[in-house]
Amino acid sequence: MTLPNFLIVGAAKAGTTSLYKYLSQHPQVYMSPRKEPRYFAPEYYTTFYHQAIGNLYREKGMSRQEYETLFDGVTNEIAIGEASTEYLFFEKSAERIKQAIPDAKILMILRNPIDRAFSAYCFHLRDGRETLSFEEALAQEPTREKQHWQVGWFYKKGGFYYEQVNRYYKLFEHHRIKIILWRNLNQNPRKVCAEVFEFLGVDPSFAPNFSRENASKKPRSKVLNRYVFKNRQFKEKIQAMLPEPVYSAIANPLKRVFYTKKDSIIPEVKEQLKRCYRDDIRKLEDLIKQDLSHWTEN
Image 1: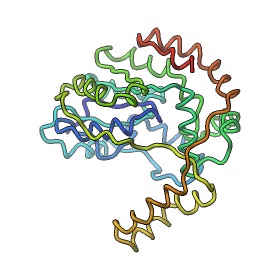
Image 2: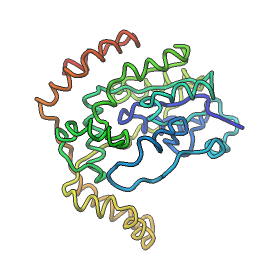
Image 3: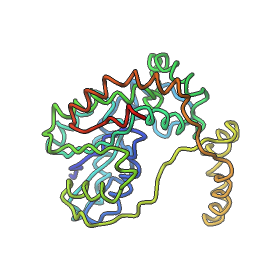
Image 4: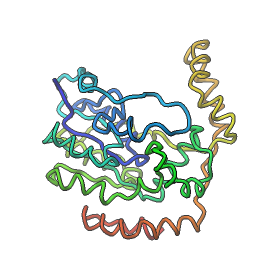
């Protein structure tokens, strides 16, 4: 039986897909072949499951046996990990991880909560899973929470990091927790990766491919996006008819034309969110001992 000895626990829309990809390339690191197994966050499939927009790819959480099979491919790797962003959000996840893997190392990427909220919104908009404007979605968030929508639609709530991070600080020795700021990962991924590799006890000189992953853009047509580009059944039928190189040669140029840069946040909404997050950011700064002034100044 093999379990991970480190976990990327969040935050969602803060660069976890990129970090997962970078770590997966390291010869001394084994990453679960599936990102977001969510084994330690069963609430994702129970309490917060029944309301969402669009297709859901899985209807129930993993069993212990299924989770363990994710690591059957481990050979002589030093660092064994997985990445599930819900582990930061759900209250019980840290405790479950501590009970199952008491000496686990914890990686977190934290992003300006305003930018994270808007990125999460644009991600759903791109995938045809959001129909409201950003301002309307923020206003509907309390209602969506009462209706037990999935946590990906909790754009504002997901950015209150203090309590989320503090749960891990209470349970794990602080030297087993590494906090990464999204800005640093985005601006200097080579330096951040070297620090992460050293934290995990693997060769810090390894340089992965740093091409960007999972960027959110805005569709030019919500209808076409939802029923053509993000229709899984439609895509599978087309892919079955065409060889992969032909499909990619057609699809990739269409995507470049169809998707455009995402809009910016309305200044008034941004100021409201700054006021909303200010106290939480101050408490988080004291907790993690890092300067977060760039979150409130810009």
